[in-house]
Length: 512
Image 1: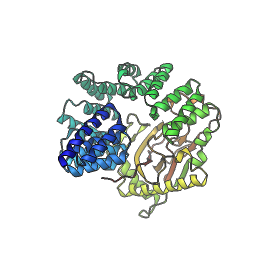
Image 2: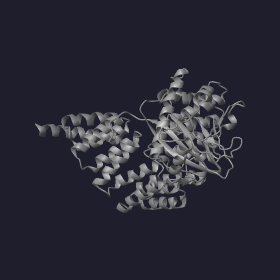
Image 3: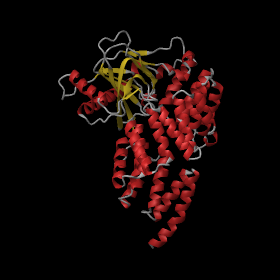
Image 4: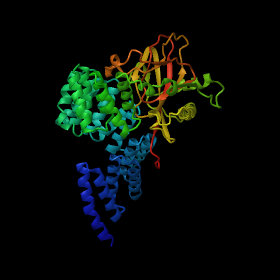
């Protein structure tokens, strides 16, 4: 009986694999599921179905299958490694870290687990630790292209773009110009402002763009930076045609249309996207500027500073005698964090340093998280009371959410350029140390201006309003994650130290 069941499962598995390889995820999942009905403990089906479910956005199902695989094969590094990838895709980064630790306890030199550990550390802003993980992985497999490319990007992000480009070239030479290696080299060149060289490399990868629209997105940006606005617009259109669900492609195209004085088409593009993906920060921001550029005053509903930006003193935690004591402990945590990096590449911080993602377990940070959660609850209640329950600011809201935080230390003359937080729904900042000699708007947080790279500032109406809040020690500021904000430069002998944070929704699922 079991033999017949197993023999019936094999052709179903083979068909599922064929469909999976072709990118037909829906049908592949159906065949994997049917295979498992015949043979519930079929390990290859459990693994591949778990991967296909993750790739099709079914994170809960993916995790269920991979946990089942780990139960069937308790010593399977692959099960925990894939489980970690599903956690990462779902924003459950602590769970991903624990799954990878478990995988590496089973097999310390497992290449993919080491590489994924580096990728997780890199994503969390701990680039130096990521570099160590990547180098360990390369010691296991010196010619692994993905690992060497990841190492190159991490090196560049820590300020060593020269060594990053050397690693890219090594990967290119060893792989006969593998497109991944060429793409990473082009990306690093673009990151350091060498856009003409980046354009040449990205153009050489066009044949792969149907599989990876990010090539076209990045090519469009480099075209824009070299003054080739029409080429940029055409390239972003191609990216959106390939994947109309890519928020970066849609927002970049929208800004390109605004530059070309076609704000109405930009608006229609954004509105259509948001019907399918409500609250997507990159596109909500682009919609606000498309509306403003066409003199549609409804943009003020998206940039409603009065209702959407809240500044409130944090409640003093019971375990501290004063806000000064609380802030002093937070300041020490930030300034002593080993991930604190001067002007990290691809971050908004200039003239200062930024940490990677903070561990919120130490007492002061744990108390800060408690204060953040109380403030977020009050913020949502206020929006509901104001009749904004269906506002884009709350469309991704969830009672179950994670909090990610990182610290910023700005020296005299330092600032943060306009940016948003595209993975979150509510973001904010807490001020732990503020120079006493700030003047006027120095060191203030300012809302409303888009980044210069968008090229649309001169398309906004003359009466376009900004919102500026002067920092104060103990002050907590909340705002929608789609709202562009920056900090204004200041002059002082003292540092301005703050902790930025995101509230990120994640699916309710069993954790590792």
